[in-house]
Length: 635
Image (cartoon, rainbow, N blue to C red; front, side, top):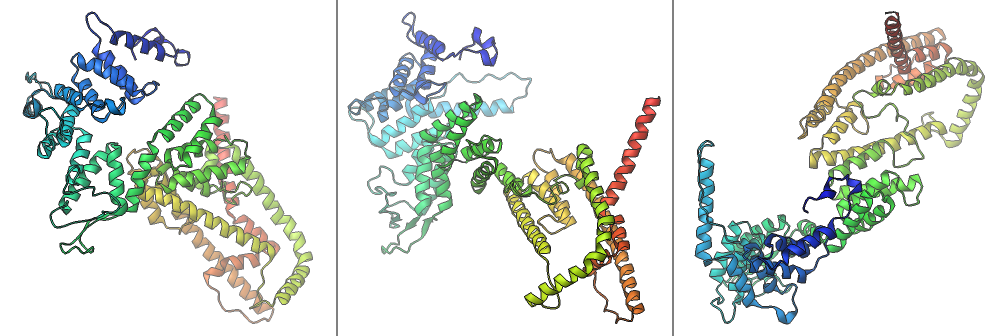
């Protein structure tokens, strides 16, 4: 719209300019003296034609203003007015007039085919010479204006149909030359028309080749050849990628059924000209549906409601559009549900509804949806009633405990929990060991005897519950890795590759593999945006530390196992009991557990636990901070 006084006001305070601007354009387009404003008339016609700027689509009004602009010298308006008369748009059925269409197409392509070809060739030569000239040299291009490419395409259509009482007979060869020129000028309708010519459009010998009853084409020379089909597919695909609806529709029909050429003897087992592809056909049909008036109108309304902060109404429209298969609507609905706009639902059903929408978009290949579904499973947002045992430790960061540097308030919670667990281990378990040993042995023996235990082994209900929790957590993390991998493989997602690297580093749902973790980190750093380079450098540094610490801990644990095994052997020899065979490293945890049943074992296991090491490290860090602050105060 034209800039006015209202344009200088703030966005929230701007009045609606639509009526004011439309009134101004209509006044300019209806001037009689000296003449109507061609630019205003053409802009009005465009807005009515396509329903732009909030103007309701009105084909009759569009034709009226196209005619005003064309009658006063606009070639572009002439091409559009000719198209309206050619197809009868904005006209009654008996008002369609090919003679008027020819008049306007001829106006937009002055001099006919030869003149338009000459103008286009001069234009191409000027572009080449201009590119070859040095920037300091002056170059003067020709003043010849290009023909209007919709008019050139329209002249080709008129030669396909033929126009009675004019000099335009049916001439497919001439029509093809017009289409080729319009194609070179960038007209997508010309691509579609050339494709239909190769498929036998308006050719009596070919007939309706895309009808359901004639998918098996003749190879006797009376129908399109395999080369014709391949060329037509190329043209249709080019036009479809530019948003041409008819090209999408016909291309989808071809892919849905495929096309097989008959042999010369008439048998059906001929050469396959186009292989069927349900995947491509479905994608094209979906693109047509998503661009339809119903869904697009609902999406526009939903977006306006969202910008106006009417989130509930916006969510309802997005959900309605999402149920038709619109990927954009699914993503927007999932986002609003995840933000807490739940249409009266509680938190848990709202998150499940959001996950369902994210999954639907992920199945269609949306990158953000794949990552978000992976996040749902990784952070256990699927079931809000259960909490991940390692939720605080296994947050995705370059190092698990770096969260306590970023969020110091969580450090006190960790210290509090660790102290409580340590005190219970040292005092509570020591006092209850001697009292509960006999009772525990009796209960375990009775349970095992009742169940008919095999190999003198028996599992407690608590152990079974922990085992089930671990299995569920493993399944959940495996699902998270599945969606991260989909985003990484199909879209080279930097976030997904970083998350996969972290999961491989710590063995979360995936096999712990440091080389593979490094590979995913490197892929995250080499992404197109380059945003992950710094984070990956930190992650790789921390991974090297993690790997070395893990090797050291395994070495110390193996030494502890050997000490405990030798102590157990000495106790057995002193008590006169037969010595057991040496156990492998897989029984380290069992040996540690049996050793911890004694008071000294409890103290040793507590001192050598990860919690104690973390507390010790954090204590030294806190001490350094306090000393530093005291020095600053003294200074």
